[in-house]
Structure formats: structure tokens, C-alpha cells
Image (cartoon, rainbow, N blue to C red; front, side, top):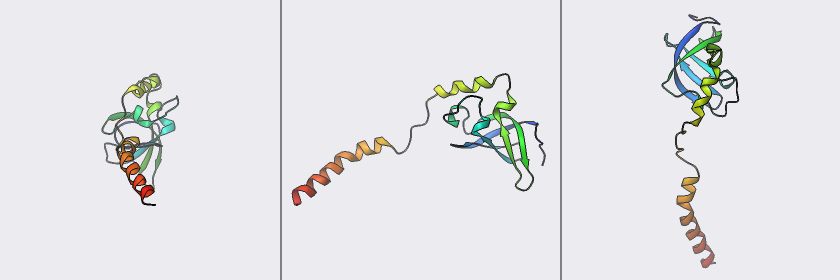
Length: 121
């Protein structure tokens, strides 16, 4: 393993999940910033703090020699400015592809189908 716990590294966010963010490091190894390592405060959504494609400075908290993956911390790399990561929560999140809007679109069609069923019986 190139990096050891305590090292400060820069990495690029490649994916975001409800439990954390995946990062690729300069040597092409990968790591995870667990949601608990994003900020000192409550993290409602990881996307409030990091974005895919963003380069972030992180601290290595653990390295797994078997898999070659790292555990990373955003908050540990920025002990004096940890609260600065909270401000992104006011940015608008991407519009979901599915959700109530699709229900709104389909509802008139469903009502019409049910009315036809009722009148047939």
C-alpha cells in the first residue's frame, strides 16, 4: 500500500451512495469516505458535502492490504474548517428521474381506466 493511516491525500469523488462517497486516488487505488467521516455534524445527504468529479483533500484512516482499498476521512483532513462543508446543503439537489411527478402524469389515465371498469360491470 502506498498510503498509510494519517497520510493526507487528494482524491476525486467517483460515486455517491447514502452511506458515503467513493474516491479514486492519484495511484488509481480506491477508497470510501464513510458518512460518519464527512462532517462533525449530522449528514442528511452526502451530496450536500461532495459532488461526483470534485477533487477533495482527505486523510487516510485505514488501509486494507488484501483489497487495496482505503478508508478515508474528509473531516479529519480539515480539523479547523470542518464546518465549511455544511454550507453546501443549501445547493439544489438533482431532480429525481422518478417520483411523484410520474404519478401526477399517470393519475388521469388510471382514473379513466377505473371508470371504464366500473361502467362495464
